[in-house]
Image (cartoon, rainbow, N blue to C red; front, side):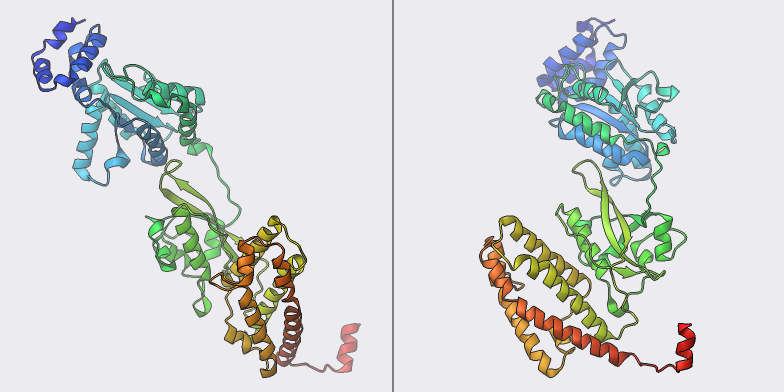
Length: 501
């Protein structure tokens, strides 16, 4: 035990106080609290940097595999500390230091720390490096320091660290830990509570802490039934076009996805993954839509589901779906994107069809959709606000599908018909452009924007005759083109009788 005057009378402490007179109260408080400890002078000396800066120096130790969880926990601690927690952790400085300098930074951070926090979601993984860092801290451990182990409640804390303050990732334990960090007196001897103002938010922050410490990987066995890949990008907000996706890393893929793209071993990049997918006539719309979706996700924007499809080597048609992301903490940067590929059984394989026939088949499909998804339901009024919203969604769905499956321009459409038929088709286009246009200044555009449920039915019903005329004309033209495409064979009567029998 040491007398307070004896501690404060140490020559180096006296000299330090002359240089930092503003820290006198904190120094005396630390000496008072530590005076009954056998290592009181050494403990006070180690506290001096923290007392002058009015911060708690923390070293956060974790395995590389647990970096996401560690980053999320550090984010909770730092954003609520009012700058009174100075946290050193691997993800915070590995980009600035390399090799021996990196090891020196670790050693410096560990030796100066007042708190050493060890994260162990799954102690069954390799612990050598974490135990090395723990050993460095123990070598200069004083009565003023704290060594804390955050662990998953279903895992057993390894024997070498069983004597430390263990915090299981349960809500009660996490709340107790956070109150110790932010609300309790003397986070280190001599310092006032870090941030008592957040006490009401402790349950919320405890939930974030518990959620960050995932179920140990050895206890998880994820099985994805659809083709699935996990890909990462340095910064998807900076994507400029679909070609930029080629640099994305493929972190993992299940067997179904590898088979879909023609691989047995997971390729390293998206460029390599897609190279076996043939894109006829420069068709890369599925990549174009995927690029837009990933960029919107990275920017925190909403997005529409991808509609574009591609044909795999097995002859089936697939559509990419962005189903999930992993990010560092609730608001941290996106780390990985989870993409599945769902078989699209509604897409017609038109590879064997003559081009004009395929264009007309596509045009007929969209004309039928327009008739039965827009004109028939909404040409009778009046419409309420929910009806108008439903109409807007229906029009957008058709537009997205039209753009995704390959827009047919007006000149291509005209080329499908005879000279006489083109005139009525052109009139139909003009009538529709008066109602709706890309600038959204058409009569229907304005009526939808104003939720004018009285005007909308009248505008749509005016399109019904033109739609009916076009459907009849296009169906007749389609039948004629099919007849021109296929040669009709006259089978011998004997062969017909044989088939009938």
